[in-house]
Length: 355
Image (cartoon, rainbow, N blue to C red; front, side, top):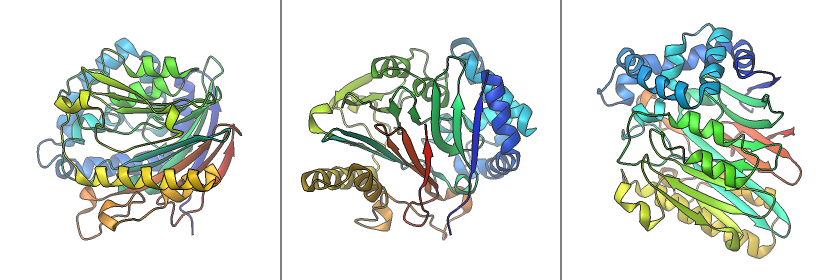
């Protein structure tokens, strides 16, 4: 049986959008916050309590308020709608800044894309802490300038990945850079980028000079362009994969330019990338339907559970150390259709949503 999730369709000011999500997913927002509050010390290997993170989040909020105030306003709306204090939501939206260097739980996401035979399809498995599988929201938001964005994410977060009504997709992956600093949190930068009307603008937004840390912006459009923009807090590399017709990315830097900023060496990330690239190349060579191909890659368990694209929780460890594929999406840019499921896609059927 598929894990249920809430579909929130809203338009208005950023504050109104946040409030609509908070009101519709109040229970889910509170459950996620409670999970993080109870397990934060374990998530940070004893380095930080949730209360201490709330204090430290003020500096990040100040930076976000200066550079991207509309999303601070959206988060305040989420706080109003859910009845959860803004400071607690700010901690969760700085979760990468606080936890992504720790060797527990965390982010093992996989992004894939096909631009071949006139089709343009992007997919993403979002891996994070287990709580988010049960507390997802399908965000379907029309922002003040009329741009509509859509994607699946945990209820207490700003939407950080998905597709928009301009035919642009950004399904970014976290990377672990060594030059992190206090600045605009990654969640806010990624939220800004997915509204961009063009790939050029999405790339420019991802390179916001005041960013706190890096990410990989995984960009595609209807012009058959496939771009990776690997960033740290202070550096970046641009990789154009359009000629290949396929693209994949996981959770490590692939450009030699970014090697000095690599903060970790997770072998499983490299295995997942190799698996995804191989499956995409084989599928395109066979002439597979791009939606079916991308969906199949996201369900893959090869070569083993430890290195699988479709991730499942290790129940032998504490909940605060468990990561899994908490949500999956496939974006058909040609049809402006998004297929989404909560939890691992091997066990949960994709539901269809149209822009």
